[in-house]
Image (cartoon, rainbow, N blue to C red; front, side, top):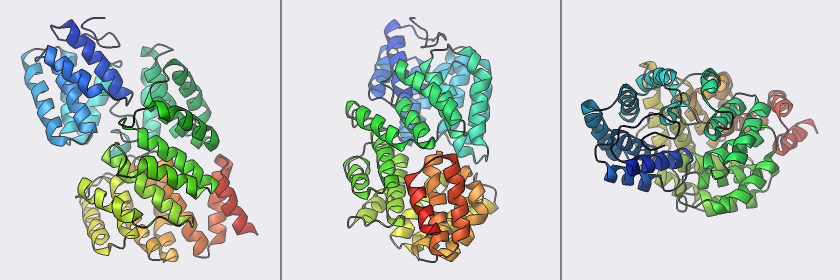
Length: 439
């Protein structure tokens, strides 16, 4: 396997050890497991002219929101691959360069063309996938289906026991509504490769979408202690457990998990995950009628303001708006709404007008104007998928709408939404809410 990647594609390196370190680094990155940076640095140390090692390191920097480092590393890869490197490697570096340098639409187009030519190039195949991938953040209303289509188009190129493909195809199916099919693939992947945080994460999603929150909780509680706290999905997996506890009405257990694993002061996760998990869990807990510890909102807002000083990414803008609304920072949320509205009108916002609408609705909800909140959210509810993220993450918007309808005196509308959700999957929270509306 020397001088080939993990799926047999050739690598332009003069060093067997560099190839070995590269394979390990990419595998660890794709598993969201600690140690990828060290492995890729070792690959570069053993062969300074190894373009794909620089490119993979750039991708890892980008994942960690280390923009300057990512741009420098991908520039090094481009310089090297221009001098020597095959067609596949030049295309590989080019796709990553587009993504890292903020050209998301071109990156997606180029990635899909690259995958058509080299479907087992996993680092590029991974770019359109996932809750934060190029499809999810494209603003497409059908990005869940697009992931399924991509996996089905190229599934024949992967072995039946390819754990990476099983995980990504399984997650795509589960997010697109084929929960049983998705979970079957994810269970197979987990049996093959249990030390993969992305597999556990995807399986927890499938369990949640199938209405088996307790199974997800059991999975996470049993697996998380063996995953180092520096792993980028450690806090997010705990968030899933906290979310299940909230569904059961056990706010004490949910907030305990939040305090121990999720909040910014303890999590080593990516900033986008820390902010969205923290904001959404606190918002849910408060919207469900639970009290929060003093200072909870303010500590997250302070972290978020430094991590995301400018608007522009719909998924994070929605969560920033929740923080700003909850902390009463009207000036900040109004500036955000104005900027997002202008971007949408100019055609620069992938998710379009749905993002400023959600921000306006969050402000109305925090003000206690439930009629206005429901009035804003109802027309855009079908378009919420365009902000990206997962179904579980986006569900906070429908939760907010349902609570606004309940508190605003629109019981029939709230009941209809709850019945549709319960038809899709059981939920102790939705059952409680429906009972309140029918008694």
